Image (tube, rainbow, N blue to C red; front, side):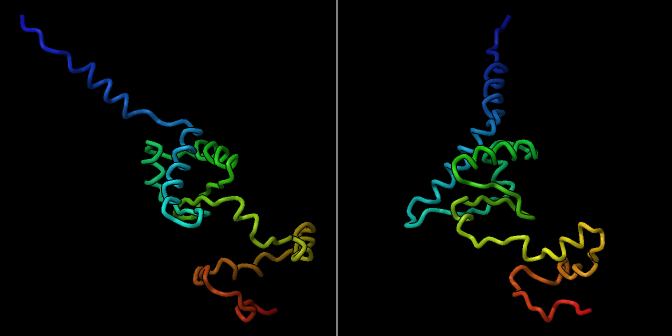
Length: 149
């Protein structure tokens, strides 16, 4: 009888090492480490980053990014001043201190419209131009583009 070494144990160990999926706190730490490497060699700290979905999947060893997992990672990141969010076709992270310096906007600007909404009398069709697909984010608001009554 010839005894051959059992390679299954070694293969199982190797397989299990590559199957580890970081928990949400660990995932947040890995993302912070990645951002830290971007800061090296720069005179200014990073305040925003764009993150491809594949980057996050590789970073966190996941084939799918569930909403619950992303929410948990986001919660951890918020505790250290970063906000993680989905931005249409990619993910992004922004330092909350940078956002706090942005100009605020208040709903008081459209109080008349809000009163009409609450009363059930607002004509939402009048705002459809805001969803016009030809209008890019980089275009300046021009009152001439708005429909007239």
